[in-house]
Length: 415
Image (cartoon, rainbow, N blue to C red; front, top):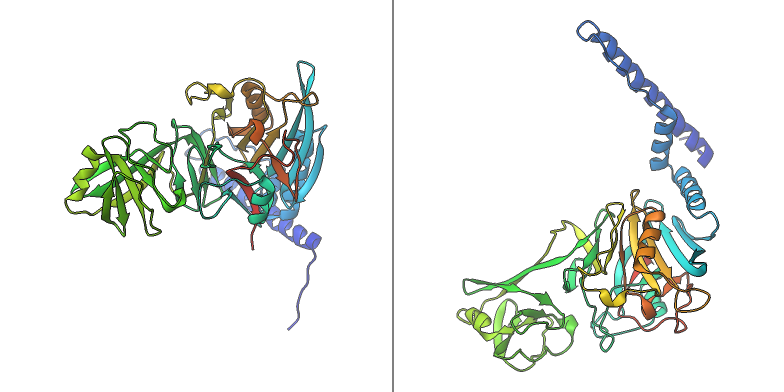
């Protein structure tokens, strides 16, 4: 049997021919429909078809060669005075300097076309696979996750490394939201969403339903009911005053105590006021149900930050509403967002030095909008701001290599 071999240019010409013929056919059909109905319809306006634009759009979707060329052109036009480097297919690293009040600010940007970067997985990553109470440098986190790009992630408790805010990885909820702060969802289909996040979780047993106020987070009120999973560590905290801890294994309560309880791998510990939790002791059954509001269907990962920077293509900085007044002023900054074309954008801004003075949140918000983000949010910043690209830290954090982090957002190569 004979085999026909086409090179890439031949393939592209064949595709262009098919598209052109198809478009002509569509136009002919449309004209035919108009003429056929001319007896009944007095005035019919035939829409103007820009077949060149339509053909280019179709080619962009089905031809990696065309899409890559368009991506290259778009990046050069968007960042005209920047130093631009290819990281891998569909991933660009951009270094630029902007001036505010006559003083410089160094900015590193990574922009990703997900339809070109098909060999990459975008996910939050913890510094340890076994516990939340861990901190490691971004280089270590990146190497442990086979990442070509990494940016520091959400806020965390410096003493322990426990993330402060919503963190879901591969559909597993590690920590819940704090102050309903904004979070970014990464979905199974590769799309994104950003919204203020609330926990919608309950434990059900003995005919009762009890609200769970948070998961693996510091206790803010003695009246809160908290859940501690094995990722929290070996032991749960002490119960609050007038409270109790319940050990749940395989959906059954096997122990109650005010003291710390060892958290099993096949269960969790519920901690809260005795007046609420003792209702579960009648039949000693317990089922934990965890959801979020908004209820993001098919969400795979969630990473929180705050405040908003861009919301529905408009600058929107709700620092006070998210109780983030302490991070105002001019500082090193990290941010994440996405464009109308679903390109992912990661940003690291250097600050607190003469050669780069940092940004205010409003300046950062305006920058994120300027580079095309339809939605964007601030991540942990200050001393935590650090970006890693292809084996090295590319910005200039105060501590060389960056401080040890709790978590990061990584672009990892698929096996």
